[in-house]
Image 1 (tube, rainbow, N blue to C red):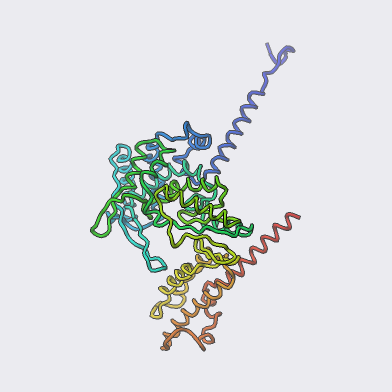
Image 2 (tube, one colour; image 1 turned 30 degrees about the horizontal axis):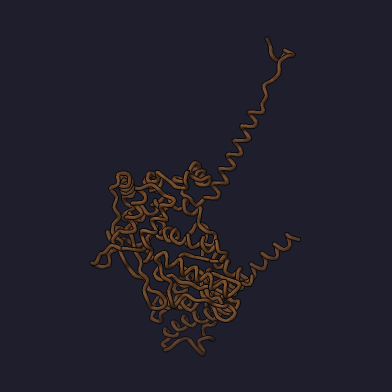
Length: 464
């Protein structure tokens, strides 16, 4: 019988099919939105299924069975790509990035197998030092390339687990956050009338983090015993300085890939303690300030910090921790000096810039002026990119100093002694250096102000 001609025939409802299609589209949109929130997470580790578990929460808020994610070939390959792009020096085994790259496939297979079987052991860290503007030196630990790959693979697995719960006012070494965000928050609070500042400094923080207490905090969210042992192995790996080698009893070396994440994990409870008490803390790694509306509130915040620091095996620097009233004295944070409503580069930041320029503008420099300027421009451009919010008089004075250094070179080549001065300004005027495309900070500041003004005008016109 032809059902289409049968008057009793009723087509089957399509509601279920339409509903299934709509549900599928909704699921796809949810997946896209979830992936957009975690664009920085390594996709070979953090699949849609893993991200769903991360956002919905796992049983007991503790993660098991993670080691297989660490030694997965795709994760190790992604880790190697990151390490390779960052370059960096060789460790104690003298294996460079280029040498590792020649046999990268073999090295990655070996690392995967060693991690899978438990045979992997980190090599010692090479200790070196980098000069600080005040004349002291900062210790830096350089792991081998193979260990940097494993640490990156480990971070790929662990970072989203802890990142989800980190406090909003923590900005250091976190995806999509940086110094500028922290500085912007401090600026906003100052404009809102917060006049009292706790300017705090943790003494030798990275070298003094207690291993046992740090591991307790890691265990709050990670229960995979092999991952925990791997973290402990990195914390206690030997340190080699010249012919001397020792095992650290505390700390996580600056220069190790995993150290920034571990340092944030340890300070996370301080972040949440401050937020729970209503204190406006802004933290970047071990550098933080707390802004308050009253001296009593600021003093209370400092008391809380002192108590937490003492209970957690750390130390506040006695000479660098203080209470400040911003209308009476300046304070420094992340390279800036905040002084009576204005921002300036702090003296150490200017000194570091000038030292870098001095090395490129020695009067005995035998390269051509265009070549010298070509080495200066990236330095000046990068410095302005960070310090462009400084008060306007900052830039002209630095420009004049840079041109003086260049005039001194030209003066030397004419057989004259001393720094550029007097008639040198007529002989080599500012436009002379502009002709060689010397990056001018003052010009960059003016253009930046004009650009910001134009953007504000467009926004205002749209709001009308």
